[in-house]
Length: 423
Image (cartoon, rainbow, N blue to C red; front, side):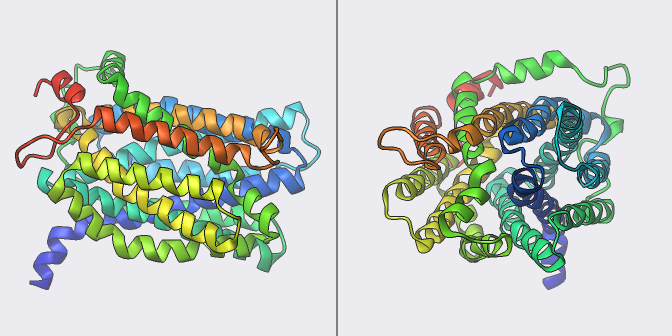
C-alpha cells in the first residue's frame, strides 16, 4: 500500500521539492539579499524599484513565450536550464561594487533581466507540469502542494540568507548561497521531473513555429475581468515585496537573520493547514476557495494597517496572509489550467502569468519611492502597505463578481473563461 501511494504521489512530491528549492533561492535574492545590498553596500536605494522591476518586467513578458516553448519541447528542459541561468546571474551581481553610476546600473538591469528570463522558464512550466500529472478531481489539492512548497521556500529562504550573511560577515554570502540553491534545483529537476508528459515534442506538428504569438494574444483576450483580477492582486504583492525586509528592520530594528526567523513561525502554521485546505477546495468548489482565500488575505492586510504595530501582529498577519494565498491561489491555478485543452495548457498559464507579472512589476517599481513618502495622516513607511490592502480588497471584489460557483460535481470555471474555451 505504501509503495502504491508513493508511486501515485511521486510526481507531485518531486515537483514540490524542486519548487521549494527554487523559490528559496528567489526568496533569498529578492526579499533579502538584493534590497540589503542595494541599500547598504551600493547606496542606491533610489534605484531599487528599477533594478527589481527589470527582473519582473522581463519575467512577465517572457512567461507566455516560455509556456509555449514548454508545450512544444517538453517541461523538463526548461526546468533544468532555467535555474542554471539564474545561478549565473546571482554570481554576477557579486562582481558589482559601489559607487553605482549609469554604467553599473545598466549592467545590473541587464543581469536582472536575464534572471527574469530564467524565472519565466521555471514557474509557468512548473505549474503546467503539475497539471499534467494529475486528473481534474485532484488538481486543486495538487496545486496546493505546489503552492505550499513555493511558500515554504519563501519562508526558509530569507532565514538561510540571513544566516549566511551574519555568520560569514558579508552581504555577498547570500548571493553565493542563491547560486548553490539554483544549481541544486537544476540537478533535482534533471533527476526528479518526469521525462515524459502529455506535451512531449512528438505530439507537436513539426511545421508549427516555435512561438505562435496569435495563440498568446488570444489567451490574453479570453477573459478581461479574470485578467484584471490577476493584475490587481499581484499589484498588491508587488507593493509589499521590495520593502518587506526594510519595513521589518526599520520598525523592529532586526538584523537579516532575525528578519528571516520571522517567516519560520507562519510557515509551520501554513504547512500544517495547506493540504486539508487544498482538499477542501476539491470538494466544495474552486470559486469558494478563491473567495475565501482572497478575503482572508485582504483582512490580514487591513489588520497590519489598522492595528497597533507589534512583532506578534506581524507574525500572525503574515501567517493569515500566507494562508489566504494558500487557499485561493491553488484553486485559481486549477481553474486557469482548464481554460484550454492539454495541448495549450502551458500557453494559457503563461498568458495569465504575464498579466500577474505586469501587476507585480508596477507594484515593485513604485513601492520603494512610496516607502520614503509621508502624507497627512500616513506615516513614513506605511503608504505601500495601505495601498497593498486597498488593491487586494479590489481583487477580492472582482473575484466575487467573476468567479461564481456552479451546480454539479464538476469543478467550476469562470463563465467568461468557459465560454471562450468552448465548454
